[in-house]
Length: 336
Image (cartoon, rainbow, N blue to C red; front, top):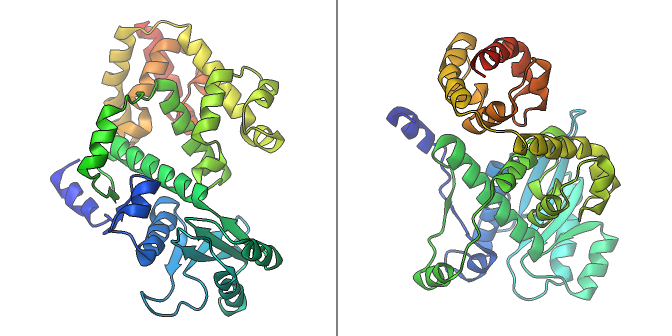
């Protein structure tokens, strides 16, 4: 990234620090109830890409909803979600539920959510059920933190810089981390995370864990499904998920099997990297839009013989098949 672009990108940076863990969220002095509301605001707005509005100001009334998040549907209509954010270690009582319910008509809300770092009392749970309030507990907040970290890593990988920052980890916690043996991320884990992002965008499934969370991803790797019925053995994969994007999952694993059974042609891989800038200039695309280094590796392994074979290459953009697919295949056949 050039210095000019880096300065321009700095203007997009969020003046806020996210936690590295749920423990840091609950125990670092940076956070209080108001910062927790900002945490949710910036997550929905800048990571999840929704329209978000923080209601009121610290110490002042918010009309029963701390946040209002708008989700635009395909038909043009909008879900308006009113959220009560409760940064509590003790259980939440009925008061916040009643306040949120009173905001429904005032703010023209279609959905009511309470997001808490703890849980609700039994009376509050009953009231929430009666008022049709969705309860999102500490486990949901933990998943938000995980998604923020994945978003940060994706920006670093793609752009070399991220719009979000994290709180520094205190020395005592660094010592604990340094004594632990961290398992490095494997290539298949990295690829499945990329696939998760693509499926999330394609089928409008947000947050990301609605596609599959890390535990379900590990179950996919362990099962190594080769046909649709194999997905019934994967933890977290019900009929709805299989129907929605099961074919893409099977295509990924079938492609992976073919790729693993092929030998990478180093000369072809180098030729593909050298050819990429030419394709980029001729078609007025960025080099990343042409294909990434990783996709070039898949191309070099699978050595597609026809334009149609490019459909089998994981990560290769389908729209590029018609743009330069025929030319690319000629290059591959010439080198191999």
